[in-house]
Length: 82
Image (tube, one colour):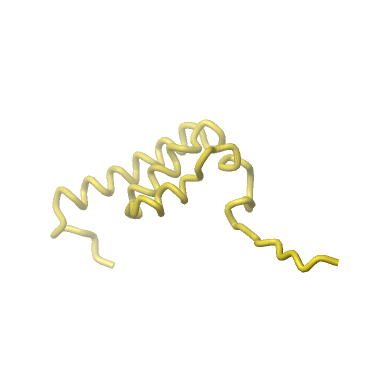
């Protein structure tokens, strides 16, 4: 009998689909390791998977996050109320 411990890694599983599994690095790893903000990270996620998952709809989602980031950066005082 061996006392080998198998370490679980969330990066080796995907809850739905397989659109990230074939990538050399998952978008979440890239985003985290580079301290990328939410809007930028969301755009990266959608851009990385658009061909394998959502098609043009994912490109529109990425564009939406980029547009929100542009608005916030253009006028940080005019952010929408919570």
